[in-house]
Amino acid sequence: MLEVCVDTLEGAQAAINGGAGRIELCSSLSEGGLTPSAGLMRAAAGLPVPCYAMIRPRSGLFVFSDADTNIMLADIAIAREAGLAGVVLGAQLSDGTLNMAVLERLVTAAGGLGKTLHRVIDVVPDPLVAMEQAIALGFERVLTSGAKPLAPDGVHLIRKMVSQAAGRISVMPGCGLTPENVSHVLAVTGATEAHAACRRAVTGDPAFSDFDPPGGRFETSETEVRMMVAALGAA
Image 1 (tube, rainbow, N blue to C red):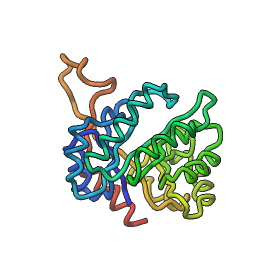
Image 2: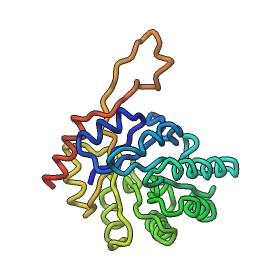
Image 3: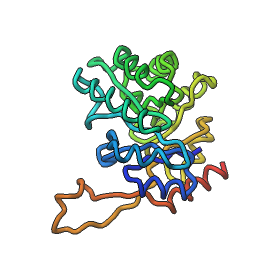
């Protein structure tokens, strides 16, 4: 299973054409992925694979104010009304641990939607403890790079997480996966699904670079998705 994160409807269609089995729907992938617009959620609900909406109201780490939490609750309601398959969540306290009170509210609001705990698990003091908390909250998967900037460097911890999970929750490696390394990461960790952006750079107009994020704009590459799917099939 390959999940591809996208921030446009065209990107979602390219991922599906390339063989992705699930879409993580975002805005602003240049910021690590923020909540998609209501219009994009509604458009994606008609796609032929499950689409999960990122619920993240701003960039930065995941200590959210009461106002942020209320916005996330409203965005979850929009995702449900749009008919999406699931949501991607995460929140932490100032000491870095998961904010169980906020997460309980968000999970309750999501109801029967699928739920992924995002890479907040990579910035908590103890990811193994956080994974047990995610299981208790009813999450179906955690997205992780093994507490490293890139998943290929975090395989030792990811392998521990998969072993400890023992089928109670899916541990999905993500960040830094390519067609060249994804089969190795899954083989070493025992994970059965992977998460990737599969992006290619798009050259903008230098005269209007202020309209593009630092480093330029990216879009989903159907070719890259196909290569990732082929690598997973070989694995």
